[in-house]
Image 1: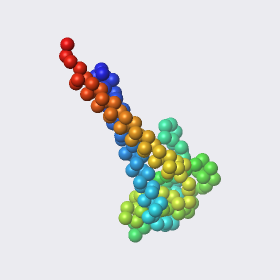
Image 2: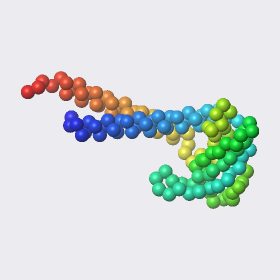
Image 3: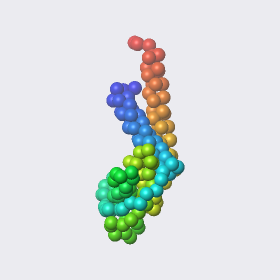
Image 4: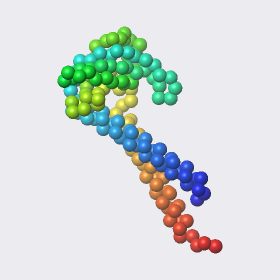
Length: 147
């Protein structure tokens, strides 16, 4: 295998592994918030639209817990974003041990949880497949006699 092809495969494996880790952490965070989270009153303070890759509508919100104010940002669908004036009251679900793990309880997620889990599994599979291919190529290269 050529060195450039090998290095590009290693780079692809590292990128897909990072995406798998990110997707997995995000899914676990949402599972904890949904399973063990408590709900507090909050305020949606602004809604903005981000252009480009990863863009869409986002809501910024604040909520109070144990004499401290916490902030959050969450993706929202266009109907919610265009149908509300800010500031507006919302409910925020958060993990009591770590209030920075939070999400609006009243606002549906744009990305379903099962889709995040699917991406984590897909990225993990691709990473493992690339690693096994690289290992097989390395073993094959080592077993070839030098001429």
